[in-house]
Length: 488
Ligand SMILES: *[C@@H]1O[C@H](CO)[C@@H](O)[C@H](O)[C@H]1NC(C)=O
Ligand SMILES: *[C@@H]1O[C@H](CO)[C@@H](O)[C@H](O)[C@H]1NC(C)=O
Ligand SMILES: *[C@@H]1O[C@H](CO)[C@@H](O)[C@H](O)[C@H]1NC(C)=O
Ligand SMILES: *[C@@H]1O[C@H](CO)[C@@H](O)[C@H](O)[C@H]1NC(C)=O
Image (tube, rainbow, N blue to C red; front, side):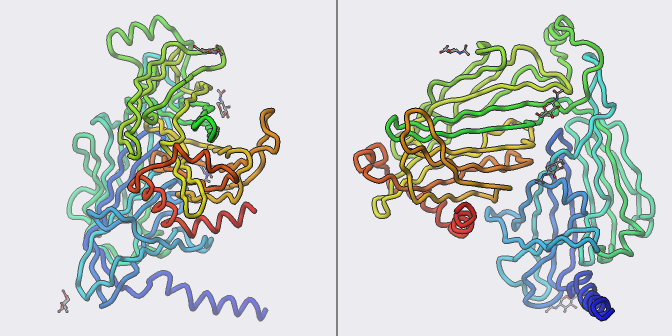
């Protein structure tokens, strides 16, 4: 009894503070643009904000719960600037049906000062094929749903949401209800490839039950999508570091999944070839994939369950000049034995060797090697549902530390033994879900190899190159120590 009343009191005190965290701001305007895609949907929300109190420096953003669940990547910046702002997410709270995060502004705003903030998110698995089946001759259409209003704890002058398809072929879109008090014109208009919801004017603070009950509602667009909807159902990347061979071997085992409408009826190669001939290939069939691999690679291999695939094509970019980074990449066109149709899986293995000196440095002062290992090679437009990265370090490596660009769901340090090793090699493993092109970043691994002075020759690199690694390590120092503790 006592406990209950206490909790009640506590909630009573805290709830109003959450619903309206002292309106230090108002939104002059909010514009949200949704780039309707396949398995990845890019959402950009621009908040034109104005301080209504002097010294305001923490701005709160809100996401609907469903939207939060679909969001695999999120970043807030000041418009036109490169550095993402620091974000603090509120803990999950089942009494609210929205998610909140505080954005730390670069400096406190004076009264009436304004700023444009840009929230960028990538949503994954946010579209569904409709109809669910399509024959080889038929089109592919997808449905995407979201909430009508961008929620905010602040009053908003004007708000718009734009749903943008790749082509004007939008089959239908929802016309919202209960928005008369915010509009002068139509609640939704379609023009070309864009459906615009709003402008909606003079919207009160909306992170509360009352507003959500009265006005929040799902909106859906149904649109033709002329590219295959791709997922990497499973990615297993193994990176092996060899100092003796000055080699970094990367091997990917992938299960590619076409998440478009399932193929209705049988696959006809003749039909496929004639479509290709008339350049009308089915939008849901994937004939080939183009990947960007690092420069200077060798011994590239690609095989599937049947054996080597000879119909692929590789153009290797030259390695970076000694001691420099290259912006160039090798281009690999993967051409499976047959086109991958809706609902189909295709498993294959892809691997290559690269000079270790292109991605490693030796720090004489600490006696440590630092090696950069990319988490994944992005497949354009595809989400990676599950990924496991393992990094096998040289035999005898000690004092292992690592610095991930974002936290893994799980990571561990174990020992990998092959017949050539006597003591086994330390192996780091990282697990992830729902990775996108924005997650195509690198993990920096650092370790010592005792008695390896004679091996350091390939790692004599310029100061400029070295500083890239050191910077990456320094800026992630906090992560590094936290994760190190976890693995030990
Ligand atoms: C801030 O704006 C309000 C309303 O627009 C105005 O009344 C007030 O004088 C302004 N204050 C300052 C310090 O600019
Ligand atoms: C694939 O081809 C390479 C060289 O072309 C060969 O060394 C390798 O044994 C082949 N692998 C399979 C599985 O056929
Ligand atoms: C495709 O692969 C995924 C993940 O490995 C699996 O869950 C699914 O059942 C596979 N689908 C087919 C049609 O084999
Ligand atoms: C990844 O996406 C799937 C499907 O939307 C979801 O069920 C799963 O919880 C997500 N995983 C993580 C770690 O967010």
